[in-house]
Length: 390
Image (cartoon, rainbow, N blue to C red; front, top):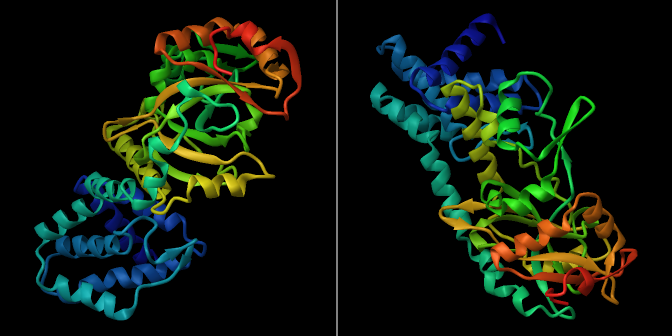
């Protein structure tokens, strides 16, 4: 691209900032995702066609028209219908001709309004609402799953959120740092410094504060009496009551869900425009994550057999619909002895009183999930959980 090309592109991108639109961040991600950066010139060649009908318009209109035409390339959903896996596939000439023709009779105020609407949260929310209510989600209705209150070890199907005792916290560091300080304050009492890093006692944190689930994008699994495998063979966690609208995707294998984007701590220390960009990116990611056609629970379980755990991406709370724990599960051997890994984890982290208190507070049962793949301890399930369901 020539210096003049770069100037026009930068003027166009700056226009989004000028009108307070979220467009610049989305379009920057669009441009950065191009596998061949030479395609930027091809895109700019389309964008500058906005000036064809504007020979009598002032320069401000020309920049607005370029910004409007660039927005048309990704308005459906970033990265847009013309970028497939990083491969630029330009719109047909008649499509661009129609856009340019419209510009002949469009004033700058209208261009500004359409650009703002194109990149508004309302557009993302409208698309999200349609995906949340897609027909395939009927197969994931709460009533399609077992009620742990009436647990049957020979016949069950649950959505579970598996736990580990602790996780590393890469954004918590020694010394002053806005994001780190926010996390240290909000997670006070649950962080341990290990060398120069920190670990979160996440099992204790979630069991003592289960409403935290509402603020998370949860990586969950679908288990049954035939396929009880959980994430990292975790021996305990929550059984969830998850509204079908909250389920983003369902995969028969590990989808490597990243759930750090858009968290409150990611906004600390940022300007208003930077916060809007982070939230916009998180919203865009969420919309992109939602599958219009979910595979059925039967298919997920069938395709999971013989492999690793499956993965469900579930939003903790959206549009007033909230995920709720309906039980705590604990893995046992077929003859009802606790897994050795659970006994070791619970003992080392003093989780037994935390588990029982959580169940009491929420009024939910503790349920034994038989799984022959774990080594047996010497502790019978009923010895630790005399009121549990087995």
